[in-house]
Image (cartoon, rainbow, N blue to C red; front, top):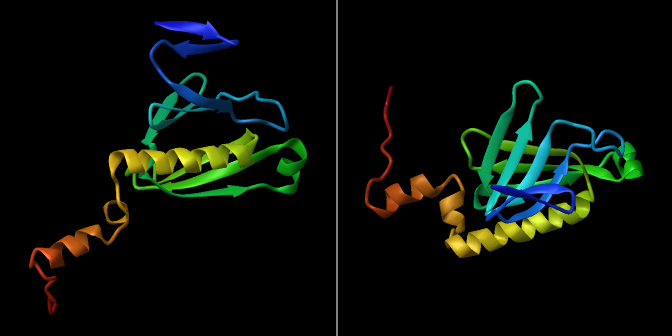
Length: 145
């Protein structure tokens, strides 16, 4: 069930923290929508055929913001995030308004989710599998081919 709140449709029981659309110039006229809530980042795109991507916030490993001169003039920016998600290793939130504030908010939410889930660096970064092998006595073997 959903309700309309401040001109936006919200699912009852969902905690949407932030939502926006991809902007063209300063106009939010796009079929790509971004939202954050319930520890997840959602990306909905398309008009006739649509696609919805979802990424758990704690799986985001790196976040960066780029703003071209035109984006700075029109008050938008593009946030790029590297993730440990197989289906979407790179997420781009393109041409979003208030991009500096959104990046800060996402950084804080990502850290909060990692703390709540007790995710440590070893769980997130590529060396975890190699360290587990050494820790449990399964040293990597050199194969002469």
